[in-house]
Length: 56
Image 1 (cartoon, one colour):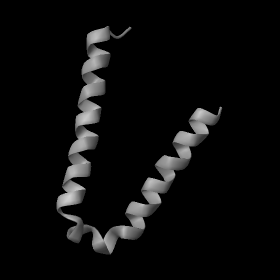
Image 2 (cartoon, helix red, strand yellow; image 1 turned 90 degrees about the vertical axis):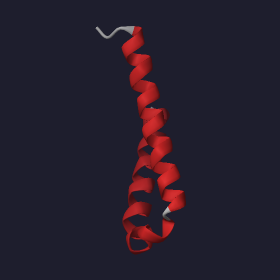
Image 3 (cartoon, one colour; image 1 turned 90 degrees about the horizontal axis):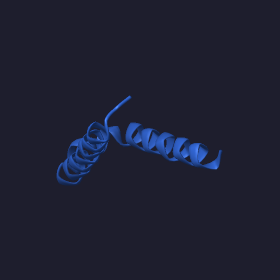
Image 4 (spheres, one colour; image 1 turned 180 degrees about the horizontal axis):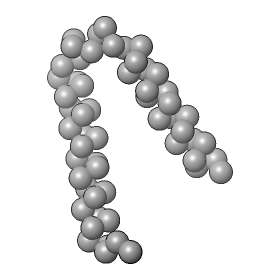
């Protein structure tokens, strides 16, 4: 079983990673222009997966 501290630290690390990716994407959006189709497909997959999870 995981300790509460480990779960909290893992959650904070995950949120920090997501925030870092979002900041990088905002600052360097020009580098992603040729990959917008992939970015859109992945974001749509995450969106649909989360709604499927919460819907059950």
